[in-house]
Image 1 (cartoon, rainbow, N blue to C red):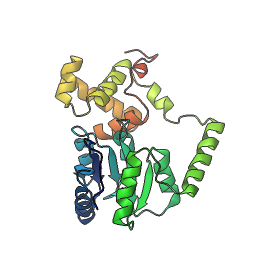
Image 2 (cartoon, rainbow, N blue to C red):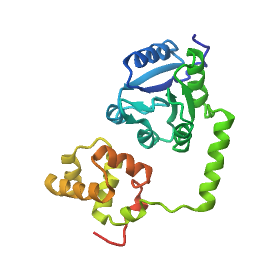
Image 3 (cartoon, rainbow, N blue to C red):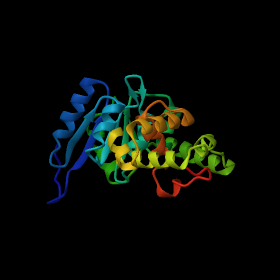
Image 4 (cartoon, rainbow, N blue to C red):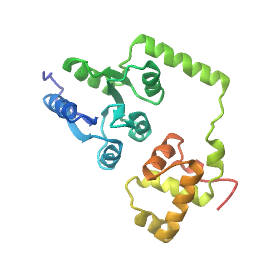
Length: 239
């Protein structure tokens, strides 16, 4: 299975996110057999594990299952794509075309069904890493058409009003959560020169305003809406 590689060419760093232990084990063995062309740098069986792994590794390609033991893999896409060098390849048993199209719209660079051959999986990883799309023509056509329609109608952001209710301090906290990723509440509080109790009160307010349940959801939401950038720190409502 190994193919010739150029001298000193770094391996393609692959992260696998799948809730099925046998599939996870098989994919890890398959990709590891391609050393030094490819290597598995991380595996995860759910969104929380994947989020934790992203604090320490920056994969080139992520093989992502869309059904993570009841969790929607689509919700993980913004966090996976924080690093511009990371590309996501969907490996799924999902057949509903609208769901697959949504994955592409959210940034996935390719889609593979779980009945794909070993050679197809390896080739898709290689091509995705090289910047190519691993999609059939009908999918590309649908996604492009939907993008044009969305742009033409200039749909408003339904969450804009919720975000506008955030105070300047709350926006600063969100910015630091995105920037610090794995920082604990105590560490964030220390950086903000406030007590952990005060920080928890701010987070409770943020969760309420944005209709979120925890820090993971907040992180994914903030990345999706680019709330970690400096330009989004200011708000007319001030502190």
